[in-house]
Image 1 (cartoon, rainbow, N blue to C red):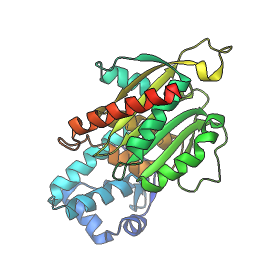
Image 2: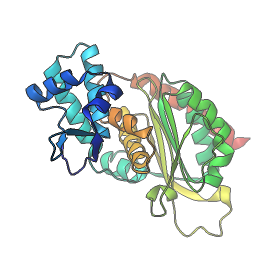
Image 3: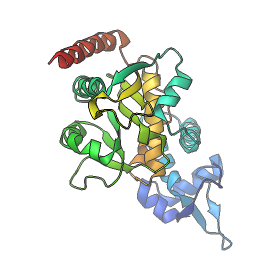
Length: 288
């Protein structure tokens, strides 16, 4: 792994304690496989980065699944490199760049809200161990959704809310991600449900020049998808932003998302049928 990326401060004992792998085993892996790769101090002592913790844990996980050691190490190293690679900070732009078939539609904030609730109800709340992300532009927009997201977080593998401003510190299960002043996500609206059985993503970009437009009538360009790869691409952007913001819980999530979703992880026909029901839900919401 590129040492320029790594800030190495963990001793081999620290790494052993954090991963459950004995120091002698870590030294053996290094001798035979060049992994984990330490930074050597002038004294000769090994020092490891936080990223090495997740990489070693990933090797252990793959070994428990029956993968032989050399292959498990190779896969974990590649996954760590992918997680460390620079990533875009706009979910909407990334989906438009990588998935040209997604055609944006102009929607009002009221319609986006209905569609978001439908995805949360029909996907996030029903998916098996989903990792979910929501970007709310500003904390004042997140505040009304906070109780709802706390409930979603209880059934999710992990839940992250991205918004500028002070987070709701009363939340016990949602990881709050502060958005930098120049973050593209401060102009975006996203809901991401990364799950093997019910993947879904909604991403929207607010059109400029709407300072005098009533809040619920503000216009966004939006795309949505149930394609697992599109969902994974969106989740990676959110997880990278969270990790870069210093949210520790995002680091193992970013590492896990480095793998592409496997073939056949989702029944797209069933998901598409469910999404049609979601659209009907949105239509009913709009007529209420």
